[in-house]
Image (cartoon, rainbow, N blue to C red):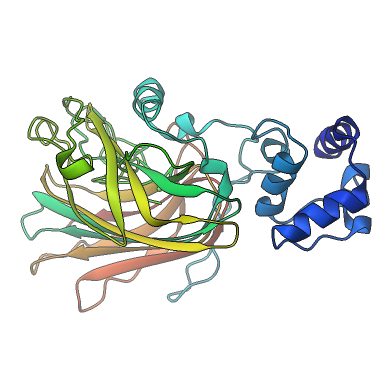
Length: 375
């Protein structure tokens, strides 16, 4: 009813009829009937598409988040996957919890991403995120490959912001985006996480994504670690990570495909960057971005996770263990925040290729990861 009341007030303040609102949604490629809009504002039903609610905020000219933050925001859930993995029972998420709570050091996270343009973040729909985390045979170095598929829910969107944790030295244990999303580290001892956020508006180039609890940057979605210097180096018109930022445990953005790097900020083992699309997106357009982090020299890890501050339709994480020594067991897990306990989803099979994977559908918010135990 909170959502219904807020929507009703926004409609009344806009002076628009339900028919006009339906028409404007249709111009954005979104089909919603007048009857459905009426049900929503009366509390008889609720929207299932966050994209539609974001569009309503723009049409009704209310601040971003006015309506979307009133939607239920449960913790990550997993659909059945190969090996019998199913969601355990992580419990409901905390509605309205800010993205910063997904990271072990909320102040550092807020300070870092505050230097980048995230004004269009709420207008990107995350269709899928695929992470491949590789741990070397002596468990002293890792690399991360990320592929993210996005769809614009508005016009004039030209970039996405990612955040990753590249060091766990200051983090006792495993953090588990993201922000996540993405993703990011929430527990001490965690190898990586990612959070993906899009930034709208054609502005100066800038950025690099990062993830909490995840080595490297978070994607289209790490853990807190050694202090690093802030990087703001822009060779050939695009920002890159300079030699100072690459020290102190922060990972370098090794390779970028189907986009170009913008501004990059790194501090205290956390890396955030913008990825600028190769074209400006209009409502309904899709974009695919790929990037790699590392290799990063860090102590042995026992988990990898991503932090999600935005819904993602499909998330897949693959952990590749190089060499002959493999973990004794591998488990999938979820968590509501960096301070929340982990909820194990089930044991994951480590195949003859030396890899384990987890596939999660309809992630709404929180942390999803894989942890393992050595003999």
